[in-house]
Image 1 (cartoon, helix red, strand yellow):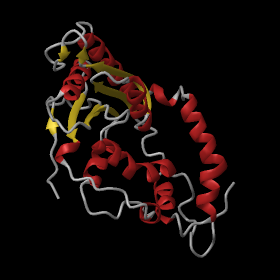
Image 2 (cartoon, helix red, strand yellow; image 1 turned 180 degrees about the vertical axis):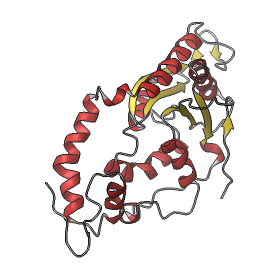
Image 3 (cartoon, helix red, strand yellow; image 1 turned 180 degrees about the horizontal axis):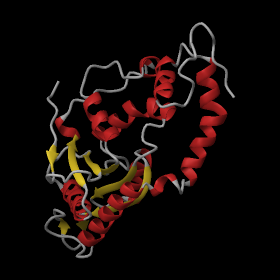
Length: 259
């Protein structure tokens, strides 16, 4: 198992909003990292603290579909998922980046999403986060992947993508050839993320996707969990800690009932 490794983008001031830039590219300094850095620069301009997490530095194994996370509240696979998850959850906002491979995020990012998805669905892990999606590609569309990443990791503040190949010039690294307006757009998005994370406007204006998840939780997830407490013991423990159900309820001796 690899050691915990972060890069501090700036020595933070006390009380600064804390953000994490998650790089899902296999390259620590490739095109995705370039576009992420421009967004991070805007975050720093707005007074935020930003830490970097490079998935390539961490061992994240495939999901086994064992449902242990629902019973225990944590994943049973002994790798670096806990370290990465703790870094993401403890932040107030997330900048999530990946290249497009075959119309999807990278295998590294997809593996992380697979490992997070089940418990995140039942506990709404990232509902309090603001998020930005950052995606690069050669010629493939970037918008859908960028929006999907941002939506998975919280309230989507925005998304930005960039292509690195043209018929005239062929492939060029993004740091060397790009739309001259792109860095300014990325920095503006970073400033917006920092402001929204600080003001928590995400709580006041839920998106249609969030409203759909609230309905799903009320009509399906909550009744399912409370009527099968042994299968969802870990989820119930998390709900208790967060004040979503009474702490004195005994999940084994007195089965919990849905609304």
